[in-house]
Length: 194
Image (cartoon, rainbow, N blue to C red; front, side):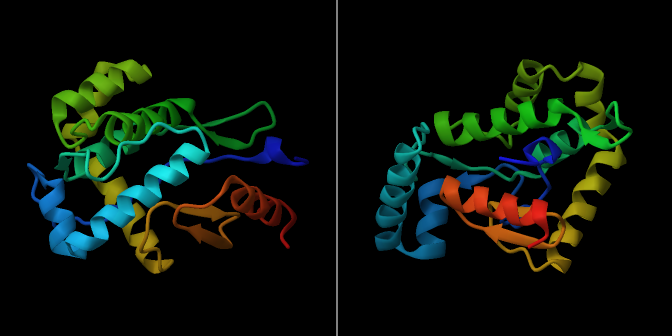
């Protein structure tokens, strides 16, 4: 795709439900309370089919046991993000945050791990190559927490209410699970300004 080398992306903070207690809740109970028992089976099968069509390993909603509070995970992602300049002087976001974010998604949706648990997060951060001192700082200093809250306020101002949401060129967004073709079209529109 022409212009694809211009793409720069990062994970932004957005807690789908910040009211989840710090220790998390049982996933089935959470979903049934929010959507009703009949909706859960249909949602689970739809997600599983969509993931399988793209060759992605994804547990069904009925297989994920725990609904974590994701604030610590978002703090860790914020702590992993660094901006630097490339050879053209353009700001780019470091690969560390991308590796960590993809690792978090795989751990939760692929293996059902509790990404609200600090020990799980420390292990995933180490696997992504995040230095231990930065992990501790992300959990304990106010910078990462402030970055998360700022991202969440920005999302609220932009009217973002769903995950995933993909922003393109800071001009428009695509929300919800999308086919690769829809995202490629959005990237083209973002690159061309159309």
